[in-house]
Each structure stands twice: as structure tokens, then as C-alpha cells.
Length: 134
Image (cartoon, rainbow, N blue to C red; front, side, top):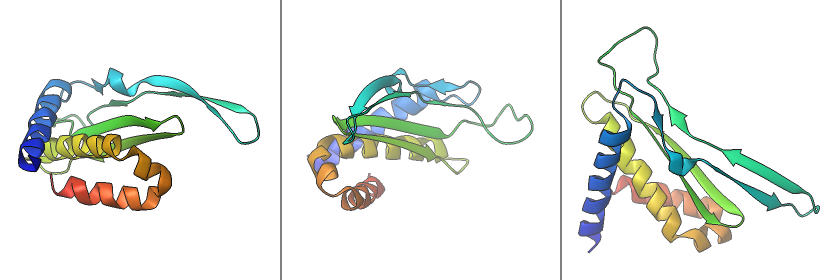
């Protein structure tokens, strides 16, 4: 089952990479746009708005250059949200690698929200280790 889940993550990430990152246009993920309010211990409320977009970077104009950025956001609880930005490096597989890692991290944080609340440092470490195994 774990192998099938990893294959599904890679397939979905590849589809996302092909659909959202084509190298010639900016990439915007409407799933990473939103807002929420968070109550502080002081009684104050903080209003948070967020959005994500990427574009082909670098200097000069190279029409063959691909946008290899991938990103994710996941609301783990009322008090926890994780954003991730991954920059794919590598001519052949950078875009796919970044997309697979972003998808794997997003799924990990969705499945381990309670762990994130208890021990954020350990959860982050475990998430990166899990992403390396995708």
C-alpha cells in the first residue's frame, strides 16, 4: 500500500508540474490563496492573508528555461499552517523533483497535524525525511 501511495503522489505531482509549471508562464495555485484570523494570547486578533505565485527566474531571457518552482500550503489546525517553497534544480528532473517533494510534504503535514502541534521541530525533521523517500 505504501508503494502504491508513493506512486500516486509521484503521478499527481507530475500532473501538477505539467499543468501548473510550463516554463513560459507564471504559476499560480488558487489552493494556496486565502485568509484567516488568529487569536493571540494577549486577546488581540491577527488577520492573515496569503497567496502563492512563481515565475521563471534568472537573468536574461531564455525561452527554453523551465519554471522549476513548486509550492504547497496546508492548514493543519486552527493554530497551525505550513507553507513550503521548493526550487527544483536540474535540467532533466528539477521540475518533477520539486513537485514530488511539495506533494509529499503537503500530504505528510495533513496526516501528522497533531504531531506538528506537539513537537514542530521533530515533525519538520520527519517530514523532510519522508519527502526524501518519495
